[in-house]
Image (cartoon, rainbow, N blue to C red; front, side, top):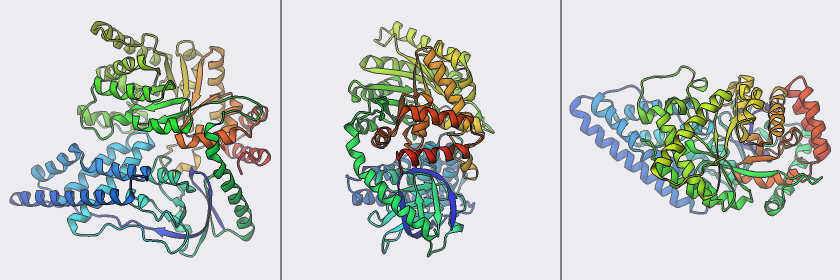
Amino acid sequence: MKRLKGQKVSDGIAIGPITVVTSREVKVKESYVAPEKVPVELKRLAKAMKKTEKEIQTFLKEIGSEQEEVQAIIQTSMEFLNDDFLKSEIRRAIEEEHCSAEFAVSRTIERLNERLQSIDNPTFASKVADLIDIEHRVINNLMGRRVEQVAKLDRQRIVVAEDLTPAQAANLDRGKVTGIATERGSWASHTAILARALGLPAVVAVHGLTESVALDSTVIIDGFRGEVIVDPDEATLVDYRQRRRKARRLTASAALERDRPSVTRDGQELRLYCNIETKEDIPRVVESGARGVGLFRTEFLFLGRTSAMSEDEQYAIYREAVEGVDGGMLAIRSIDFGADKFDRHHGSGFKELNPFMGQRAIRLSLEHEDFFRTQLRAVLRAAVHGKVRLMFPMIMDLGEFRKASAVLERAKEELRERGEQFDEQLPIGTMIELPSAALDARKLAREADFFSIGTNDLTQYTLGVDRTNQRVASLYTPWHPAILRLMKEVVRAARKNGRYLSVCGETAGDPWYLPLLLGLGIRNLSMAPPQIASVKRALRRLYVSHCNDLVEDAIDAPSADEVQGLLDQFHQRAGSLL
């Protein structure tokens, strides 16, 4: 028996035999053609692109309109295939540098992937898989090869893979797959998104997974704890079969929680909101029973575009979003991406050696004030249509918050000069994602209207762990005592100054982590829409006093492992999960 740790991305327990899915890597050698052959290569490229588009359209028709999450995965690949910037760059490589069609596709997509990977955001990083999928499809069509797909399964099995391409993830035999485990991936990967949509237990970033299994292995996936157990002994199998039965009963009752109040067993209310990336997510927010949107990640509006978005375009999107939540709150975060992403629109030869620590988020916005003010004017105008809040990402200290607020005032003045209607009293807050901001929270709370703790980045920057790096994934522990102490300081500062405070990181939607948030004094959470029901269900089983005691012990614990043990014991006693 072997236990492997990974990142839990979809709750549940799966037990059974496995099928190992492999992806044939497309390797292309550097190659060039004679100038007179350029028209031939362009014609080959056009034919392969057209065939690839037809393949994707056929697959979209086959999966049907009811499978929205699956459609969204494949539709993203289609959007990349039809991206004008991508197509023009490939053609330019052929026309100007005389690259072969295969090499032009491979090199262009490799360079775009480098840009996406430099952005410190796991959802942006997941788009790399879309581009790789397009690369494989187009090159296979150029070479006259079939795209490898997941075979139909003979019986119910757990899928084990180094990683799954978007096509493989979307084409899984959903009647037979009972769980998914991969060596790579993140919370925002296509594998994770599909697993959550289908209700499949899943663990990703499991180092050494494919080397640890044999074709006849039996595997347990513990999606609650982020563990994969290979060839479990009989006692472990018996224990996990009982856990699986209980998990299924709880899952069956989760839908009933959507319209119930979000209160603890002793009557403490928590206000639950949703994280969104586009206005198309709004219907899911309403269906979930959430009170509104706690985090609108506006950088996703720019993904895949080859030019900047105008003020009116942004205004229309924000207005539609706030009107869509029908009286609920809409907390808009200004753009949070790195200089590499910005350079795609504005052109710059500068390349940062460490973009995660470089000119990103609010630093980038302050450096490019015209770009920043365009977004701020759009938000200010949209705010007259509902309960809008604006927050700045990656604020380092009060001085940086004041600089961003000064730009907002200049945006207001521009709207006054134009005679535009806007919200003069728009609440302005800040994300708490850096240790310096958490330590400076008391100063920030005197001027910021509200706080939102981003546990993803706060954990990463405090512990010095890149959450997208598979080799150190096990060290990424938001329950680390140091993180809890920083969050406690932020809670105290917010309470002292009467400021609204929420948590919008991945931990906000995690029922396992919920007792720590309650014990810290957090009363507002923002999460993915599908997580609302399970958080309500878990919340109803908790006592605030018990959670307070847990946090006191956790903060004094010597390590994250110790806190994890305390949490496991807490849940066993409380019966709040499994």
